Length: 336
Figure 1 (cartoon, rainbow, N blue to C red):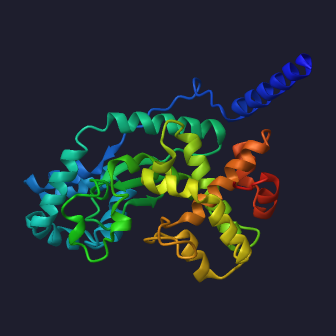
Figure 2: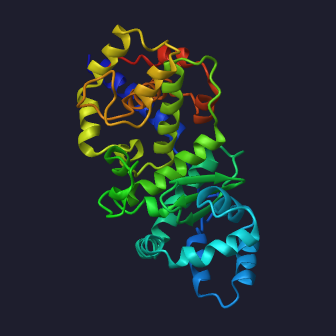
Figure 3: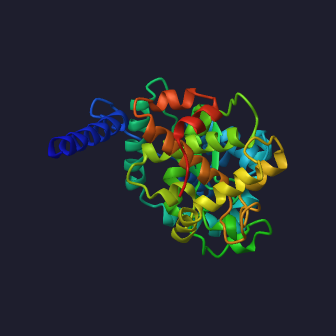
């Protein structure tokens, strides 16, 4: 009996080691050092320019891919040089713009810790997905228009939307709802960079277009984001408070039963998908105590169960598998 018991322990340990090994990244041979391009500083320095036209040209030369996107599609100054030059003096004199830039530049005066976290995350990303290209990482001030901006081979963060949920200017926006603002905090910046990178590199290409397919896709992105950021708290990756995360853990079985009993998993009703997956005060098919996007939480738990149960599946194989129903079936997912 003791030999059998000992053999079982060895088998459990072996399985655990195999799973750990298949998801452990040896990044020692990956040469990568993320340095954030500070478009925010370079642009704001134009207000002291003695030759605005020449300095604007230098800004475009330094950021040839991002500057046109920023002026044309983020702050909406226009696409022509003359139009931008006409707008800039008025913009630099605007009190709200001054406040946003002053506060954002002060909050993100030093970014070495962020660069270190991103370097480690992108190294892990290159280990698991060596074919992927690492984008240029930029910071800008978006005038509260966008959190993340994706363009050709770059990802830019609007750092004015990462100043903390209690930042005084947030509450003045008509569309700045509390359930959105709670994630406008510095702690969310790194995981947003990584999740946006993954969303860009692995676009949604489902075999079907049902709620289950959306849930599994979102779950994959959350799982991989956490995989690339092993020291990040899962609720931060998810964009939940500690209390919201705990609520989901305690009510996971009830949420799953709601999905099954209402036969929602295989629905292709787009309105229903929005209720389960999009930002909102709560997830409408569940109780009003639930956080928004709880369908994504369930998707993450299914993917996590699948990867835990199928220890030989690599992250690349996970992302390549577009059969959401197969992933669900092989996950053995059954919350208790």
